[in-house]
Length: 187
Image 1 (cartoon, helix red, strand yellow):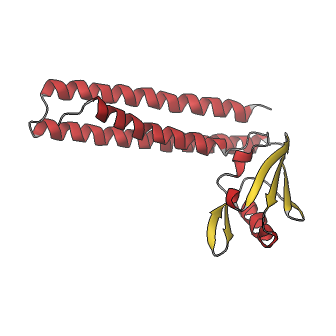
Image 2 (cartoon, helix red, strand yellow; image 1 turned 45 degrees about the vertical axis):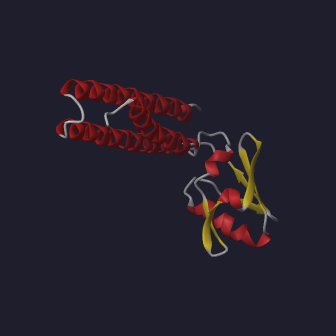
Image 3 (cartoon, one colour; image 1 turned 135 degrees about the vertical axis):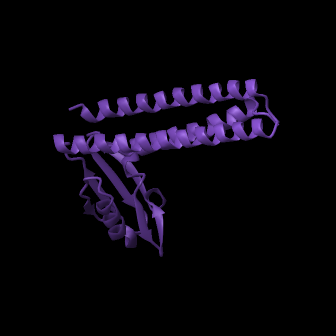
């Protein structure tokens, strides 16, 4: 049992999962333009449990600086309003029957800096996750060599492949972060 290309594919899959998670987190950061993804992290307390907002309402973007939330069950309107306010997204819902309108306030320089810091935090979490997968892979390679299931040369070659993959995906994280940072800083 050596670390084959199949195992490398599995390692890459695990590392890429952290980049996918980073992209989801970053899509929720507000950039001055309305986006339905902004409300993805909102969890609403309804029917005795926490549910994602998109399971109790329809989210749409009728205008560039407005998000509309159509709550399906009138009895959940207040819970949705509360969940949006508590999500610390800087949004103040305006209730109109079963619809909540969320005007997008202009981003202040201070709020932009906060969003950039948050984006950096998300990127760092992603890098840590990638490095953890790398460490697990390197530990496995050491064990395989120690147990005599892999030669020293194979171990060295596989370790280099893991490191190259790690470096490439860390670079992807940095590129994704730089793109989001530029988006946030645009006036």
